[in-house]
Image (tube, rainbow, N blue to C red; front, side, top):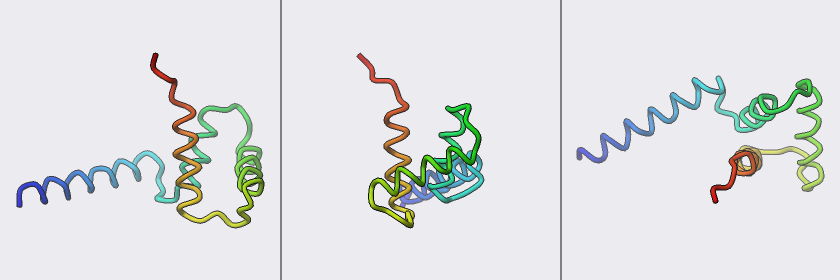
Length: 83
């Protein structure tokens, strides 16, 4: 029972931290905010870049999972490889 409570507390903390960081539960918004933080381009250009990448992948209307995968790929590419 203790482990279930611990797991629920960890999940609640993760959800709270995500909302605190991004002020949204939408991974498309996470992607946009993170790309804007690493670039000097204006927000509209970043949005167009994201939209263009989805269109090149054949996705006209990205859903939750599409944005989540793209966000994970962006975060993975952003992290330097350890040697």
